[in-house]
Length: 220
Length: 152
Image (cartoon, rainbow over all chains, first blue to last red; front, side, top):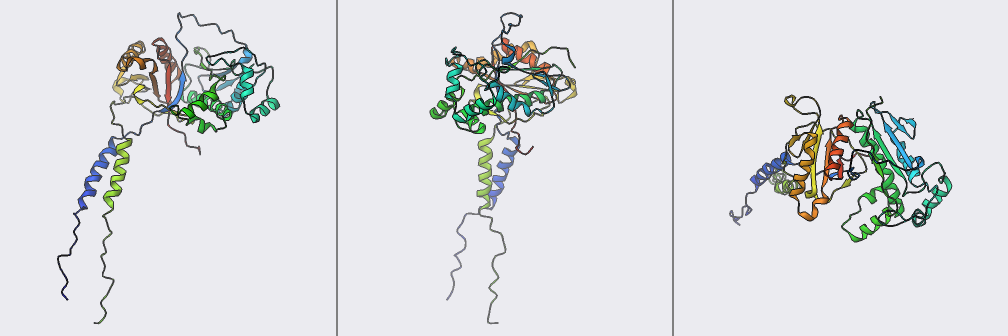
């Protein structure tokens, strides 16, 4: 039986398609810049009306001081420190200290420290009762301020490391408060009403008070 | 010979699926791509960080780049590049206003300034920029940083 010869491939020759696609691909590979709109956010204080710095009438115990000299050496709460990653735990303890929680309602949400304390989950309350609550540390989260004072000669790298640690501490607090890890907390989508509610719940009464102090020119 | 060799099949690798694979890659890059609008004229070795927040509205971001210039024509001192041009510190406020003017009126206060800073930069210049931004009432800032991998 004679076989039909005209049964050759009916496909369109797609061999050069790959070449065309490669060409386009290489173009996009070269021009691409994967969008990295990610970073550490910070809200600066409002502008000073005159050059006189505002006197901070804050108790020393309510300020967690981090100083960096021009050789990138750290002074945390007046103690020298070599390991930046220790700051995370210290700030966590500092903010959640509740040394003398007040009834005074503060901030935009009008939440007092005592209400903040009562809204915390049981595991955090237990941790606070067991380990924290000293009179030497902060009165409550609404009073607690973390102050970073970097010398003009210190490097940006160490500053970012410190800022990263501070954000880690706060994100851990916020996350734990609503039963998330810090990573899950960071990924909350503020456009989603359910996520936004969690986000607001986590933040109410615990302001992220990171202050970048004006550096002095002396030291190191 | 009675038995014909059956293993005379085609030895070519089938490449029909190749365009599909390439197209898939192509679409990935097309979707993630941002065409470079500005040429960055300063060194950018940005320190990595862990606790990153992703900004949702890309159009509300203005970029400042700080670092030592890439070319010696501009010297070796760290310079500030705002969007596409070098600026002096006292020009930053004006630049902020220009950036704000590009936005619609209701969104002007939501402008975020993204700072991409080389890790060797000294903090003095950063603080000066921040002081200028405060004067210009651009208080939302972000230190852009790539993600730190967990293992180091």
